[in-house]
Image 1 (tube, one colour):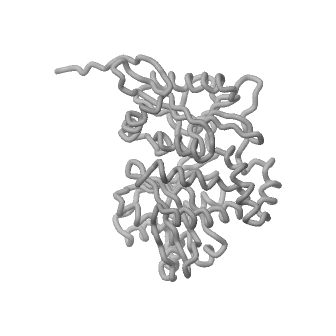
Image 2: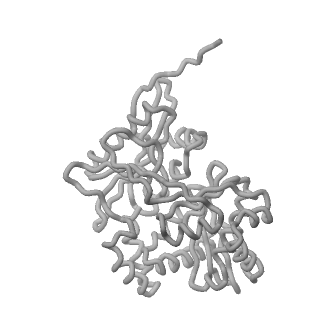
Image 3: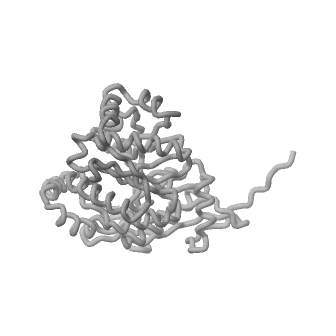
Amino acid sequence: MTVPIVSPLLGLRAAVFEDRPAIDAFVRAHPESTPFHLSAWGKAVADGCGQRGHILLAERADGAIEGMLPLTEMRHVLFGKALVSNGFAVGGGVLVNSDAAAGMLAEAGWALAQKLGCPSLELRGGVRPAGDWILEEGAYLGFVRPLAASDEEELTAIPRKQRAEVRKALALDLKVTVGRSAADLKAHYAVYSESVRNLGTPVFPATLFRSVLREFGNDADILTVRHAGTPIASVLSLYHGGMVYPYWGGGTHAARALRGNDRMYFALMAHARARGCTRFDFGRSKVGTGPAAFKKNWGFEGVPLSYAKRVADGQEAREINPLSPKYQAKIALWKKLPLPVANLIGPLLARGLG
């Protein structure tokens, strides 16, 4: 029997622009990767929000990538500094083929955080690093399930009460479109900005959404639901590894009575199936919240997520959780802002919330 010769680990280095094809090939081939590991995500965040990206690589002596760690250098006058894997994402973290590479990358990430003057390093998923790290478990749930083979089977997979709501939505005079044009972006931003304002959250800059569509190409699109020509629900989704990620979605006040969100997500399931996707990632939600209950109603079982954080001695990690008591008064005030005012101020704040 011939025993394959595995090249030993050579070491670590920071990626350069020319590494993007090799990095993306490694990510796409890895079963635990997410779209947030792709170089396109870091580039889109840098261009769309002005937050600098880094990628650390663990390589073998023959030049083969053994692991990678995508990072975003978050800096904001109100929300402080942090090195995050990965910025504006719910996933990321160390992605490796071996434990040796995992340990090296985690320590290299921490060293980079110290070099950049960031008091903390946040890893959103990936391999759990050993050592002096704070593990955050039980606060968030992830919601993923397989897509059914047809619309009728998909309806059957949805619990009875929510299935009835979807059937009502299908009976209404709603039009669904999918695209990547400037008009699609405009419709999405109009809906999404109103949706997050109603939740008391600043909206991200429109440049972030444009940058994501540009960098991801056909692996990202916008699905919009309209009533009488007016957009009432819209979602920007990513596609990676046979999974659809409905990432930035929402609905207007009118969408509730018209069941716009129900129509939107059911249409996205069919659209993703037609694209060849086999799984649907409904994203993460805080335990005990309305969004978590909504996803469970669709037949998604929440799975606890874990995150790792490291904080410099004598320093405090930034706090950007909207459920924190310190933000409740501000959220209540933000909900009352006129939409044009929220859309003017929001992007300046949201740049620091990744």
